[in-house]
Image 1 (cartoon, helix red, strand yellow):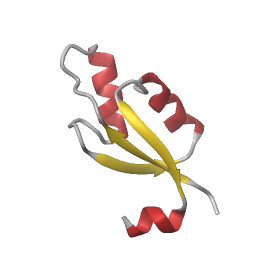
Image 2: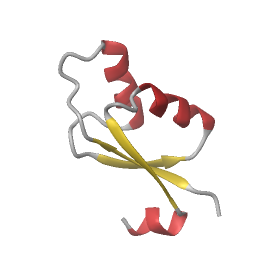
Image 3: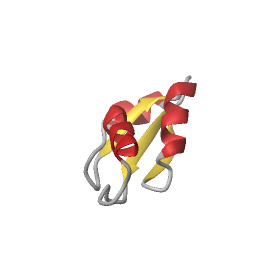
Image 4: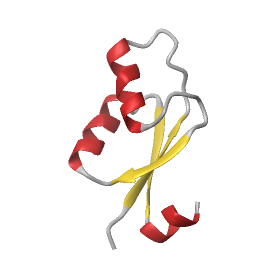
Length: 68
C-alpha cells in the first residue's frame, strides 16, 4: 500500500521567515506538538524539505495513519 507521512512540528516559528510560516500553514501545522498525516507526494516532500529543521517526519502505512 502507499505510504503516508506523519509530520510533527517540534520547533517554534518565532524569528522564522514569513514564507516558511506559510509553508507550515500549508502543511496543516502552526503550533509546537501538532501532528498531521499527509500523502507521500513530491509536492508535500518539497514543502517538508523547506521546513525540515522545524519538524520531524516519519513514514507510516495507511492503516497506521487511520488508527492515529
